[in-house]
Length: 348
Ligand SMILES: *[C@@H]1O[C@H](CO)[C@@H](O)[C@H](O)[C@H]1NC(C)=O
Ligand SMILES: *[C@@H]1O[C@H](CO)[C@@H](O)[C@H](O)[C@H]1NC(C)=O
Ligand SMILES: *[C@@H]1O[C@H](CO)[C@@H](O)[C@H](O)[C@H]1NC(C)=O
Ligand SMILES: *[C@@H]1O[C@H](CO)[C@@H](O)[C@H](O)[C@H]1NC(C)=O
Ligand SMILES: *[C@@H]1O[C@H](CO)[C@@H](O)[C@H](O)[C@H]1NC(C)=O
Ligand SMILES: CC(=O)N[C@H]1CO[C@H](CO)[C@@H](O)[C@@H]1O
Image (tube, protein in one colour):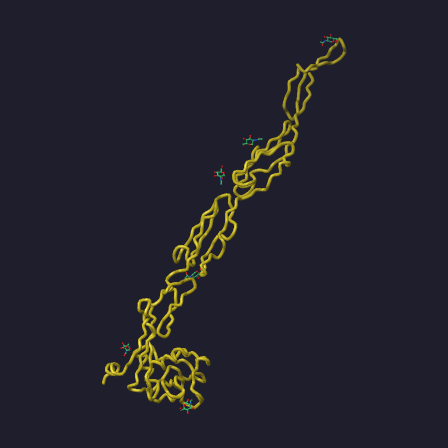
C-alpha cells in the first residue's frame, strides 16, 4: 500500500469553515491511526503533510480533540515533550505554562525516557487528560494545518488561528473584518485667518494623517501647529487658532499737548492699526505723523511727546545815529529777518 492509499483510507478529517467572511478556512485537523506511529515518526508525518503535530494550545483545543476524535486503543500523541526538566511545545520550544497542563492524576512522574506526551481521547478514566509515555510507543497521530494565509488579513493585522475560526487581530488604528480600514478622525477646519494642509497615509483624516497649520501674515498661531490622528480616532491636540499680532497699547496722554487718532481695522492696537499724532497749536513732535503696527507686532516708530515750538528770529537792523539828539535810533522797517540758528548783530 502506498502512502496515498493510506491517506485515502485512514485519514479522517475535520474541517471547520467559517460561515461568514468569504468562507475562509480555520485550523484544520487530520488524524491517522493506521498505522499507529512512534512519536518521532508521527511528527514527521505531520510535518510532511500538514503544518505540524497538534500542540494542544488551550483547554478549548484539548476538549475539542476529545469531542471529535474517535477512540483509539493506543490513544494519540500530541506535540508536547520534555526538554531538560521542562515540558515544552515541541513546535516552538516554549514552556507549557502550569495552568495549561492537563495531566492525568499522578502524572507526569519522572521516569527516564518517558518524555513524550499522549492524550487520553475518550478514555473512561481521565478522559482528555495527558500522560507521559515512552516516545517509542506507537500511537495515533493528530496533525493540524494553519488556515491563516498571507491574504487572510490585511497588512494592518495579525492573523490569529483559533479552533473553527481565525481572526484578524487589528493593529492599533485599524478596524474591519480584515483590518483594512483605518480609524477616522473628525475632519479639521481651517482656522479663521489661517489654513492647514495634511498628509494622509491611510485615507482622508484617518489614523496617522498629519496636518500642519499656518496663519496669515500678521497673525500668530496659538496652540500646536502639527496634529496627528491617533488610533483612538481623536486628534492628538485641539486645532490651533490664529491670533492677530498685537502691538503695545498706546496711551493718548503720552503725546502730551496733542492727540492720537488711531484706526483699528482688525483689533485694537493690532496688526495694521495706524495712529496719527497731532500736536496742539504751538507744539510739535519729532517723528512721523503716522505710525503703523507691523506684522510682527511692532510700531513702525515710537511716539514722541509734543513739545512747544522754539522760534529763533534773527534780525539785522540798521541803526542810525540821530546827531541832533545825540541818540541812536532804529525802527523795524529797516530790519531783515532770518530764520537761523545763529544769532548775529550787525552794526552798520
Ligand atoms: C486532510 O483532510 C482534508 C479534509 O477532509 C482532506 O481533504 C485532505 O485530503 C486530508 N489530507 C490528507 C493529506 O489526507
Ligand atoms: C504611524 O505613525 C507612526 C509615527 O510616525 C509610525 O511609527 C507608524 O509606523 C505609523 N503606522 C502606520 C500604520 O502608518
Ligand atoms: C482721524 O483720522 C481719520 C482718517 O485718518 C480722519 O478722517 C479723521 O478726520 C481724523 N480725526 C481727527 C480728530 O483728527
Ligand atoms: C494690512 O495692510 C496691508 C497694507 O495696507 C494690506 O495689504 C493687508 O491686506 C492688510 N491686512 C489685513 C489682514 O487687513
Ligand atoms: C532826530 O530827532 C529829532 C527830534 O526827535 C527828529 O525831529 C529828527 O527827525 C531826528 N533825525 C533823524 C535823522 O532821525
Ligand atoms: C514519566 C511518566 O509518565 N511516568 C508515568 C508515565 O507512564 C508510566 C506508565 O503509564 C507510569 O507508570 C508513570 O507513572
